[in-house]
Image (tube, rainbow, N blue to C red):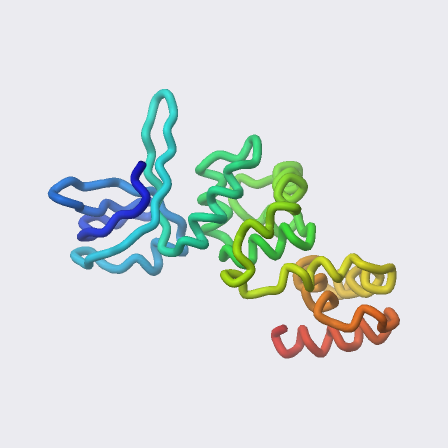
Length: 201
């Protein structure tokens, strides 16, 4: 299996790049995030890769970070989610945002990715919610435990519903409320969460 590529970038198209390694050009499909950070033609680049083996094709997918690769593998482990959908979701969101959406049960936000309808988004959240911890907490820019806290009691749930009705996403609301003292009443949770959201969490 090809785990990484380290070589000269010789072709850079909208959804793929070609990296020359030892005189061989290897085509890698990439996310928009990787495309934006991979470098320019002629640069020496390094990509984490995933080889997809099918009856009619061998496709290589390249990622600028190991976290992006891990999330890609996690998403594509869901039944009905192929590599194209995995790339589409990672092109629309950072790995952190995807994990936050899954951890908080925010299927709706995932529908912003091309080709992802609400039923597929709900399946992704349902199948992966308990697996979010498989991405090392040290690699995430949010606290998975905090998101879990947000569903711990009725006051938290009510506060989240209120924040969502004010226009915040389920993920943003869950994270903001989950970081607070869960013994506070609903009004206080809303007030403090709004302050936190105003500061950009």
